[in-house]
Image 1 (cartoon, rainbow, N blue to C red):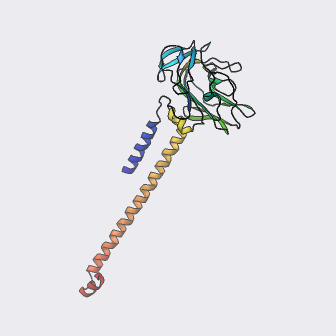
Image 2: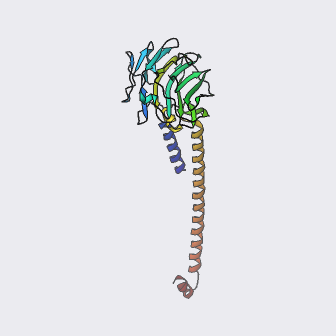
Image 3: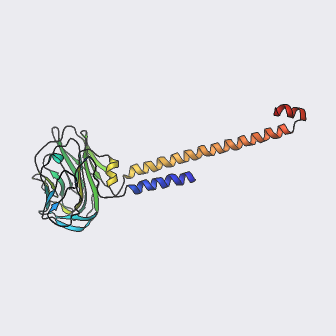
Length: 282
């Protein structure tokens, strides 16, 4: 029983470690905007790549997912980031953001006309990558409510395009080829002609990476770890615990049987005549 308690405490600690937090910087982070400035017209990139964005009409709010954030009115608000090689010459990709919608209208979250985008369309996450022979779009299946924070992500690894919602895969498509390289600016909260939906809501935390991050890495940034995987792990741990208990119980039963047999042998030897007893003990 003590072993089971220890195992389940470990699982609880693992789940707690997957609590939401601000995006972190690693060697694969090409751009990261916390939107923590709280004032001014510049959204500063936290990496050394200097992908600072110019804020156009979007307004600051203290009610972000993590303190400050930017509000977009769905009419003409956006953040514009000039071209740079760090976010314009990618062979693999992960786009991530925390968003809260004010309405059910469609809205672009991150867009670089030509190579990639992630948006909310028809109340689900939609993303796309232009690689190889053309565009591949992926549409999620889980509807997003208004007034609620969501972690959304898009990945491309040269084989699949995938979208994620709150750390769980929500749609995928097969895709191969290199990502198109263009000199277009990147926009947050708006997309260029053809994807020109202005986002109506709040955006907090945007990160662009030059790798296709794994579901576990994405779920680390999400408020909710992938439920199916966690349930499978719990079930597997419980099965292993029961298996261990069965083996321990079996060992205890065998030990008890052995002790009983040894006791009977000792009693039998003690009951023999003195001469035979001596020979047995020798």
